[in-house]
Length: 154
Image (tube, rainbow, N blue to C red; front, top):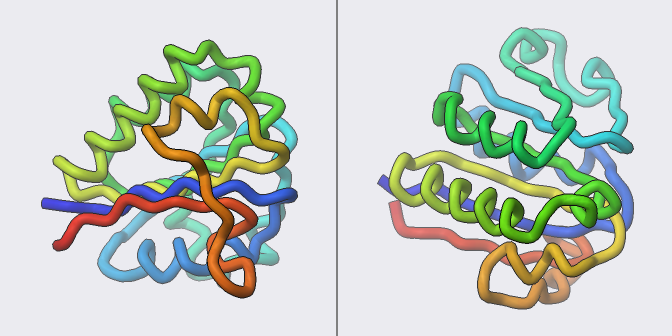
Protein backbone atom coordinates (compact mmCIF):
# COMPACT_ATOMS: atom_id res chain seq x y z
CA UNK A 1 0.00 0.00 0.00
CA UNK A 2 1.66 3.22 -1.15
CA UNK A 3 0.51 6.80 -1.11
CA UNK A 4 1.89 10.23 -1.93
CA UNK A 5 3.78 12.66 0.28
CA UNK A 6 4.37 16.05 -1.28
CA UNK A 7 5.99 18.98 0.51
CA UNK A 8 6.27 22.33 -1.23
CA UNK A 9 6.88 25.96 -0.36
CA UNK A 10 5.10 28.96 -1.82
CA UNK A 11 5.60 32.67 -1.10
CA UNK A 12 1.93 33.11 -0.12
CA UNK A 13 -1.13 30.96 0.38
CA UNK A 14 -3.53 30.69 -2.52
CA UNK A 15 -6.39 28.35 -3.27
CA UNK A 16 -4.80 27.56 -6.64
CA UNK A 17 -2.31 25.29 -4.86
CA UNK A 18 -5.20 23.07 -3.81
CA UNK A 19 -6.18 21.97 -7.32
CA UNK A 20 -3.75 19.03 -7.61
CA UNK A 21 -4.63 17.90 -4.10
CA UNK A 22 -8.33 18.03 -4.92
CA UNK A 23 -7.82 15.73 -7.93
CA UNK A 24 -6.39 13.12 -5.56
CA UNK A 25 -8.84 13.78 -2.72
CA UNK A 26 -11.91 13.48 -4.92
CA UNK A 27 -10.84 10.18 -6.46
CA UNK A 28 -12.25 7.62 -4.08
CA UNK A 29 -12.29 9.40 -0.71
CA UNK A 30 -15.42 10.42 1.15
CA UNK A 31 -13.73 13.09 3.27
CA UNK A 32 -10.48 14.97 3.53
CA UNK A 33 -8.63 17.06 6.10
CA UNK A 34 -7.35 20.63 5.96
CA UNK A 35 -4.91 21.48 8.74
CA UNK A 36 -3.96 25.16 8.95
CA UNK A 37 -1.59 27.10 11.21
CA UNK A 38 -2.04 30.70 12.29
CA UNK A 39 -1.61 33.14 9.42
CA UNK A 40 -3.50 31.03 6.87
CA UNK A 41 -6.96 32.27 6.02
CA UNK A 42 -9.39 31.16 3.35
CA UNK A 43 -13.11 30.99 2.70
CA UNK A 44 -13.90 27.40 1.77
CA UNK A 45 -17.24 28.45 0.29
CA UNK A 46 -15.38 30.36 -2.43
CA UNK A 47 -12.98 27.52 -3.24
CA UNK A 48 -15.10 24.36 -3.16
CA UNK A 49 -18.51 23.46 -4.55
CA UNK A 50 -21.22 23.51 -1.92
CA UNK A 51 -21.81 19.75 -2.13
CA UNK A 52 -18.19 19.11 -0.99
CA UNK A 53 -18.28 21.31 2.11
CA UNK A 54 -19.64 18.57 4.44
CA UNK A 55 -16.69 16.34 3.38
CA UNK A 56 -14.02 18.83 4.49
CA UNK A 57 -12.66 18.54 8.02
CA UNK A 58 -10.87 21.78 8.90
CA UNK A 59 -8.67 22.06 11.96
CA UNK A 60 -6.42 24.84 13.20
CA UNK A 61 -2.93 23.68 14.21
CA UNK A 62 -1.98 25.50 17.40
CA UNK A 63 1.18 23.58 18.32
CA UNK A 64 3.58 21.15 16.71
CA UNK A 65 2.56 18.53 19.27
CA UNK A 66 -1.07 18.91 18.19
CA UNK A 67 -0.08 18.25 14.56
CA UNK A 68 1.78 15.12 15.66
CA UNK A 69 -1.25 13.86 17.56
CA UNK A 70 -3.67 14.60 14.72
CA UNK A 71 -1.54 12.69 12.23
CA UNK A 72 -1.06 9.72 14.56
CA UNK A 73 -4.61 9.40 15.90
CA UNK A 74 -6.79 10.20 12.89
CA UNK A 75 -7.88 8.24 9.83
CA UNK A 76 -6.09 7.73 6.52
CA UNK A 77 -8.13 10.20 4.49
CA UNK A 78 -6.09 12.71 2.44
CA UNK A 79 -4.49 15.65 4.29
CA UNK A 80 -3.65 19.13 3.07
CA UNK A 81 -1.43 20.81 5.66
CA UNK A 82 -0.70 24.50 5.26
CA UNK A 83 1.79 25.99 7.69
CA UNK A 84 3.46 29.39 7.69
CA UNK A 85 7.23 29.32 7.86
CA UNK A 86 7.13 31.76 10.79
CA UNK A 87 5.14 29.27 12.86
CA UNK A 88 7.34 26.35 11.82
CA UNK A 89 10.48 28.26 12.86
CA UNK A 90 9.19 28.16 16.45
CA UNK A 91 8.79 24.37 16.46
CA UNK A 92 11.60 22.26 17.94
CA UNK A 93 13.63 20.62 15.17
CA UNK A 94 13.20 17.18 16.73
CA UNK A 95 9.42 17.59 16.50
CA UNK A 96 9.58 18.72 12.85
CA UNK A 97 11.66 15.64 12.09
CA UNK A 98 9.14 13.49 13.96
CA UNK A 99 6.26 15.01 11.98
CA UNK A 100 8.10 14.19 8.77
CA UNK A 101 8.57 10.57 9.92
CA UNK A 102 4.88 10.28 10.82
CA UNK A 103 3.90 11.63 7.38
CA UNK A 104 6.20 9.07 5.70
CA UNK A 105 4.63 6.24 7.69
CA UNK A 106 1.07 7.40 6.91
CA UNK A 107 1.79 7.62 3.19
CA UNK A 108 4.09 4.64 2.65
CA UNK A 109 2.67 2.00 4.95
CA UNK A 110 -0.95 3.11 5.26
CA UNK A 111 -1.49 4.36 1.70
CA UNK A 112 -2.46 7.90 2.67
CA UNK A 113 -2.02 11.10 0.70
CA UNK A 114 -0.45 14.16 2.33
CA UNK A 115 0.30 17.50 0.73
CA UNK A 116 2.14 20.00 2.93
CA UNK A 117 2.32 23.62 1.80
CA UNK A 118 4.86 25.74 3.66
CA UNK A 119 3.92 29.38 3.17
CA UNK A 120 6.65 32.02 3.32
CA UNK A 121 10.43 32.00 3.49
CA UNK A 122 12.52 28.88 3.92
CA UNK A 123 14.23 28.14 7.18
CA UNK A 124 16.18 25.69 9.28
CA UNK A 125 13.06 23.49 9.55
CA UNK A 126 13.56 22.44 5.91
CA UNK A 127 16.61 20.43 6.98
CA UNK A 128 14.33 18.18 9.03
CA UNK A 129 11.79 17.55 6.28
CA UNK A 130 13.80 14.75 4.71
CA UNK A 131 17.38 14.34 3.61
CA UNK A 132 17.09 16.61 0.64
CA UNK A 133 17.15 20.27 -0.28
CA UNK A 134 13.84 21.69 -1.46
CA UNK A 135 14.58 22.37 -5.13
CA UNK A 136 13.01 24.94 -7.43
CA UNK A 137 9.60 23.96 -8.77
CA UNK A 138 9.20 22.81 -12.36
CA UNK A 139 8.39 24.88 -15.43
CA UNK A 140 5.67 27.44 -14.95
CA UNK A 141 6.07 27.27 -11.17
CA UNK A 142 4.42 23.82 -11.00
CA UNK A 143 4.38 22.74 -7.39
CA UNK A 144 5.09 26.17 -6.01
CA UNK A 145 8.32 28.05 -5.68
CA UNK A 146 10.14 25.09 -4.13
CA UNK A 147 8.97 21.52 -4.21
CA UNK A 148 9.89 17.90 -3.71
CA UNK A 149 7.85 14.77 -3.78
CA UNK A 150 8.06 11.17 -2.64
CA UNK A 151 5.90 8.91 -4.73
CA UNK A 152 5.85 5.14 -4.62
CA UNK A 153 4.27 2.95 -7.28
CA UNK A 154 0.74 1.87 -6.38
